[in-house]
Image 1 (cartoon, rainbow, N blue to C red):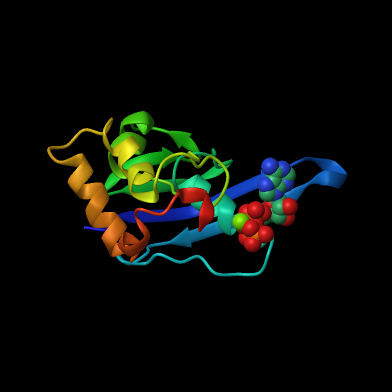
Image 2: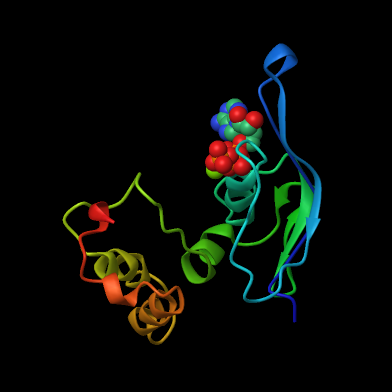
Length: 143
Ligand SMILES: Nc1ncnc2c1ncn2[C@@H]1O[C@H](COP(=O)(O)OP(=O)(O)OP(=O)(O)O)[C@@H](O)[C@H]1O
Ligand SMILES: [Mg+2]
């Protein structure tokens, strides 16, 4: 089953002379292990990640996660909070990091509030998968 499918995503910031189309008619079905969004500054990478991560609302477009319809023409039609808690995660490069926690602890802290049988183990798996385990004990703001 597809982990993710997006169709016709639009996201526009501002209006009139300040209007910017950050996303316009974007569709994608990433492979399960796709993990990069590449493009020049301003191409819309962060906006796309935030829309797919259910942090920012798309103006229009349809989204499915694991076959479940999540957005219908931009409107949430699923339990977005539960999806965010159980299936989605963000690791910020600088902003919002907790300065006194190691990277490993930073990854594990949201996992503790997630449902599932072994959330911390899952966080550790993801950490290793992203090849960051070697630096897991490093304070998160220093690298
Ligand atoms: N909150 C906002 N308000 C207004 N315009 C925005 C906002 N966020 C992004 N934009 C604009 O939307 C467009 C896409 O921005 P976005 O941050 O998604 O690009 P990006 O590919 O992540 O860029 P970068 O590589 O610099 O991080 C840019 O023109 C940007 O100025
Ligand atoms: Mg960006």
